Length: 137
Image 1 (tube, one colour):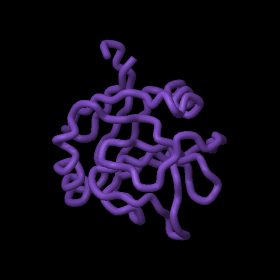
Image 2 (cartoon, helix red, strand yellow):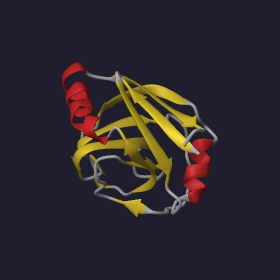
Image 3 (tube, rainbow, N blue to C red):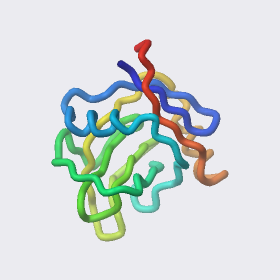
Image 4 (tube, rainbow, N blue to C red):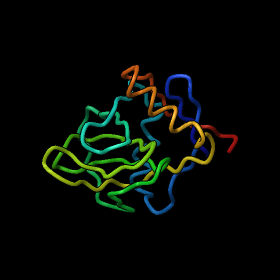
């Protein structure tokens, strides 16, 4: 089962990461997930979506420097739960220091649009964001 992600006018397809099964199951149970994706203040070339709910998940398949298209779910206690969407160089952080997030989704289509998505989020501000299941993958 695949994932469809829309951000503004950009479309992406991805897959859940098998090394984060509990986090992926948690996320999948909340799809479709909709809101606005904004520029991350502390993490470099990344956007974020605050989950606005408590999330209690153990660390699994964690990373601090995700590559473009490696989407993280942060469920820790140091900062607000969120989805981190890297589109360039990223070092996941909050105002108090470094963070690590669970790598839950890898983009497999649309990677060529990540740079343009980043420019759009930076120059135009918050963009409509939706993650949904795509059963055709």
